[in-house]
Length: 196
Image (cartoon, rainbow, N blue to C red; front, top):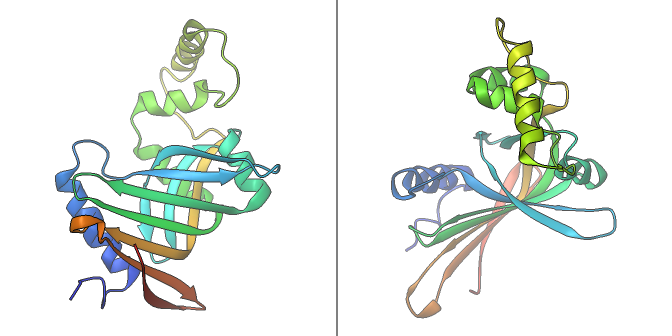
C-alpha cells in the first residue's frame, strides 16, 4: 500500500520536501511557477519556496515584474516541484494573494546584504542595455545604504499560493506511475488516484 493513501497533502508534502533536501544537489525548494497573461499566454519560471504551511506556499519577487502583473490580473497560478533524484513531482493549482507586510519585512531582513541591494537595483523584466548598467545601479545603492540597514523596497514583497489541488506523482517501473490527487472541499480535502 502506498504511503500516499492515508496521508494528508501537507504532511506528505513535508515528507517529500525533507527527503529532497538530502537528495537534491541544488535548491531542493525550487519550483516552477506558471502564470497566465490577460491574452491567455502562459509563462513559467523557476522561483524558490520560502515558506509553507496549511495556509499555502510562499515565494518573493519584484512587484513590478511580469509575473506579478500576471498574478494581479488573474489571481491564479500553478506550481511544480520536480525532484529528479527522487523521481517524484508535486503539482499545485490555486489562488494567490500578497503576504502581510510584516511577513515580507521579516524575510527581507533575513536575506544577505547583497541580495537586499539587488532587490533595489533590479528593474525586473524590463529591458537592460548591458550588464554594466545593472552593476552601476547596484553600486549606487551600495553607496546609498553604506552605513545603514537596507530597507525592503516598496516594489518587493511575497505571495502566498492557497492550494485548491495538490497532485503527487511517483515514478514506478515500466511507466506504471502512481498519482494521487488531493482537492480542497471547503476546509477538508478529498483524495483519489489518477491513471498515470
